[in-house]
Image (cartoon, rainbow over the protein chains, first blue to last red):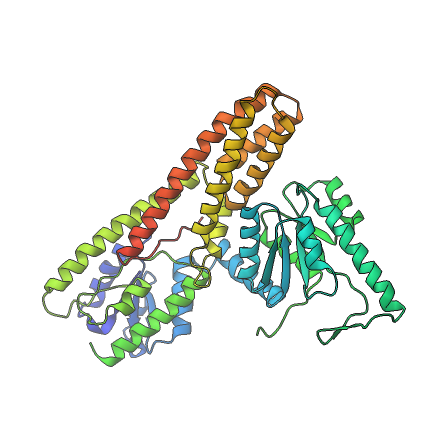
Length: 243
Length: 219
């Protein structure tokens, strides 16, 4: 990337074109010229489409837009555009949410946690179904759980069944007014933490078993942006103001 | 240079930082022979030319040499990374990992890949020793391969994941010979992966030590 303040150069307009063509024939570096808008009278200079011109006085936001557009193109439908939109959307859903991620494999755990943390979630990791049950015994303050299905000692289905069992027992007692409904200042009529299965092989049978055991849905492993957003959006509303 | 120029430079830096957080543009090392405060420029990787100034001073020359070294390192890094994708050793998931790395999580890729080296190394050793036993416990072996498939998929180690997939297909067909034939390639792919990624990380360290920034690839 090369930024040149036009006023510091004494090149004539015609030489500018030659100079600029050096840069347009190769992809990098990109040439940007910082120019005084008073020069708009020099129409030849400004009409040269090969020049990326940024007008002075400089503003950071304008610089960002111009640089981004020139570097990545207006019609770029690649990662960057999706990434920006996707990150913002998932961020508005997950910001500040307390999420439990359960996977017996430490690499998968680290990657899943990293992805969720990127969107602003507070992530706790558990490496077994047993640990998951300890964490999710109500009352607790988790907002959602991502659970690996295939784990050695206790798989995701069994762990979910037990969690739903604990929730059902407590909900019964809540209905009979045997226990207080309030936790951390929130009134909870009935406990049901959203549990999403994380699975590497997504097949129909797995889907049915997920629902049968009390899971709320599933996502593929590793996470895929749009699918993750779709599933998470079923439980969390977008936060219009991010804290 | 005057204060207006300095202010402009700061604005450029801010804009580039914003872009870097989102887009990670390809950046060049900084060369700033004419400006006293070169830290502004080097932190955002901007090459500035100001030819109305007088002759190049000694500092300028050394800066330019250092810049060339960094450039060469960056090019080697980019070439290596590109080849890893082209040869199918890495897939898109690795790029996703790189995008998870930011100032809040600076060593993320290195941490996760190092974890994988340990994890996969252990699993492959188990596989090999299990296969060398009198009575081979294929169920156990399948469990190990399943683990390896999951973790290699998580970090984008495509070739390793692919061999695990092939193993799984042979296993499902009860093809013992097919299963057995996967072990050696699995080990080989892991050895290759480890050495290439270690080379990549070494280059990263060298680039940073020389004051440059890591080029980001766009796929």
